[in-house]
Length: 149
Image (cartoon, rainbow, N blue to C red; front, side):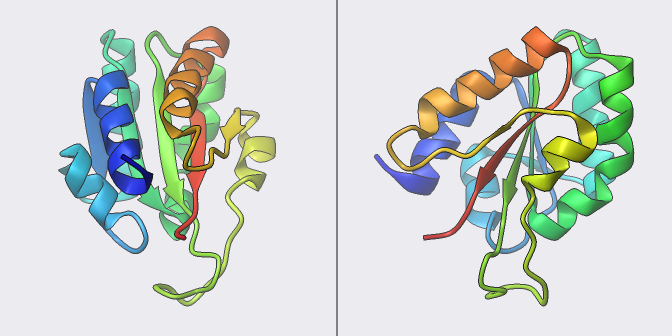
């Protein structure tokens, strides 16, 4: 098992809840993970933060431009703290194949002072669990950055 399916299985094993706003390159992943579609990315992250405070792990699956909409709750969550892990899986479209912009979401790690993990196909499963553990250890959201092959 590789790629998108491996990531979906790793998410299902590590998290209790999943939220998304579909779009390239994460629509297939969100569907495979069984993520609930929300009105927008900010709302998805706010749901996940609420889950965390209720003791449930949550994952938010967004495309790179969707991460921009999450910045306000992402930065505030660093000051607020978490109870259970919250991980954002962000799909960066490095060739602007499905969007009109290219973005490197790793910079949000610096802005929000959160860990960013960038696994390859061989390390996807342990990377997802490591992201949740980092989120819980440091009481902040963790980001897992993936790019299409």
